[in-house]
Image (cartoon, rainbow, N blue to C red; front, side, top):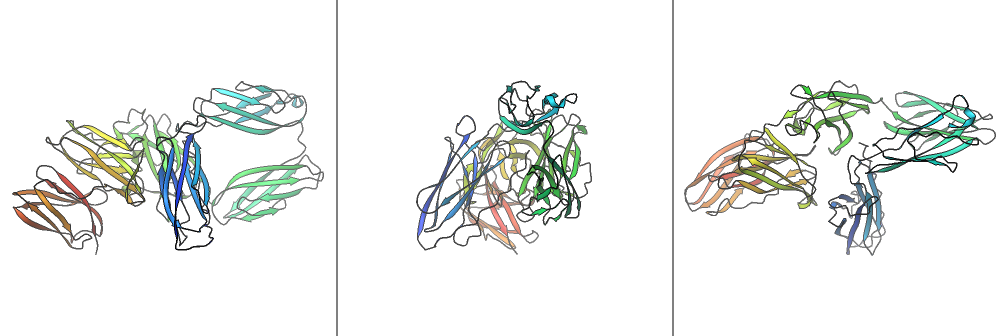
Length: 583
């Protein structure tokens, strides 16, 4: 998978600021490349510069069935506001636009994306000259394109073409020709062009380099021209240099594209570039993915990097496994990573093993980080087996949505890993949310379960469900993803009709909370408290007589933080709410 592009937000421009307000319409469309068809349920991130003291905005907008997204935002009038729009396509490429509001009219951005997912192709070729007769032109063009193309179209730059995969071609005269190869399959197209020199090149150059810490010494070479030569360098970080052997110090470790341009006494110019890494060289990371001690047949491995400032997770490298269950990442730059292994849908292990973090954790919160530098290969991962729920006539289904402005339910979130756990956090089953954010589990025995959204870097409050013979189905599970974690989106309500005026106070609490209820009959229910990992940290049985009754729960032994309080009546009806403990 290609690395996601880093986004640099533009500085916010000011004209004048007053107390007057104006409503700005934000809108746009997302359509499919090639067909122009609408792309529904596609996320577009819209933001301004959050450092502006007068106005800031961030939201995730999803396209509707017509491929349109929109929002209304109120801002101070008489301002010039750049709105930055970001989305990605099926290959993980980041697409970025800026639309500036300067008074009047909507702010719009339109995107065209591929939608197939894992359907990318890349055109590339080699040009091999005829060693027995170099003047005759090329011995062979060899395509090394990826993506299983079914169509090849060559333009040799001299007015001739070919549709063969690896054609032969002879040029009539020496010179430089721009050769282009276009490939296509049922899902993608791509083109690669390269200048092919026929006959002795008028002049050319190349360079080598070596690092000592962050100091890089370059050595440039020029030939086939008329001396003396001049050497002009672009070091890829905004700095330039001259001379055949300059030394440059990079301030920040990372990848840079270095370019050398040489010019001889007759104004013959040659250019060469290299993609270099400043800092400690990248590492090879490898390991084996096993299930019950055997290498799995098919799977996808992802390296996640955690931003040390924001804590956000980004998938920076993705690869598959070979036939023996081994995976390899090459040239991984120094940093801290998590490794996630998941059997693909065509694997024989897909229905019986869960996606698993290195070393063998189903949850990111208990996963083991790897720190590069010096790798400690191999990083072997043993997939966690799915215990499988006991069969029965019950079912659980629901939806996961985006927290609109981080407070309420918003657009659906697809492709989220949803775990079904028992009350001791054993993994029973796994599924993924569909394009509408919906998920389901079926054929479940009566009992209590946890529905848990596993998203790297985000704490999760599990949704607690109890299935009974009287209520064997729960089709109302609602999960909400926010920047601060996964919440259940449940609002407080009475347990059953005969209860009224249910209250839990104080919230936030310190050492004790009170559960108060007004009941029309003798009854009891169970109070359970869960931490953010879903671990139960307290359980008490509460009995109520008729009338207005209250019970106190002691919190002295619990750490400060956010917890989930579950109250379950004796007939299985449940209510859940968040509880914050402070000291």
